[in-house]
Length: 111
Image (cartoon, rainbow, N blue to C red; front, side, top):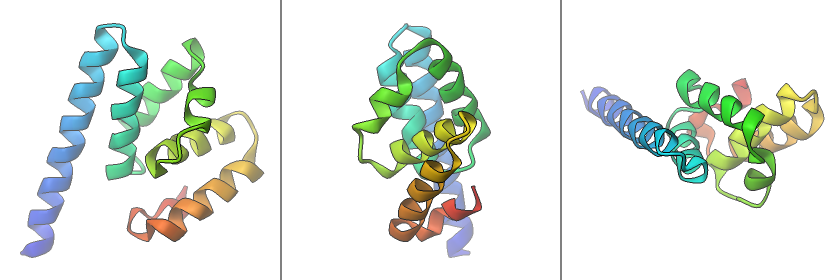
């Protein structure tokens, strides 16, 4: 029963982060949107909606540069995805391994 309750809270938190991110993006504030998409990845490292939005923003903005200076594990997960998309698998794997060591419950190593 306890895990179901936690799962519900996690889903709610993910939905909240995605809603805030979408609102910020629709208002043209990509950095604010990015922060909440990154927060969504911190809740669910495999959030397709967050990842798709981050990838979209990366085509139009300097997202990788913005994430490079951010040590938050969600930001580093987003960075790993984008680095892998660009073919930089080695650096992406190193980042994922570090995130997995700090936050094993995210199962980031599956990335």
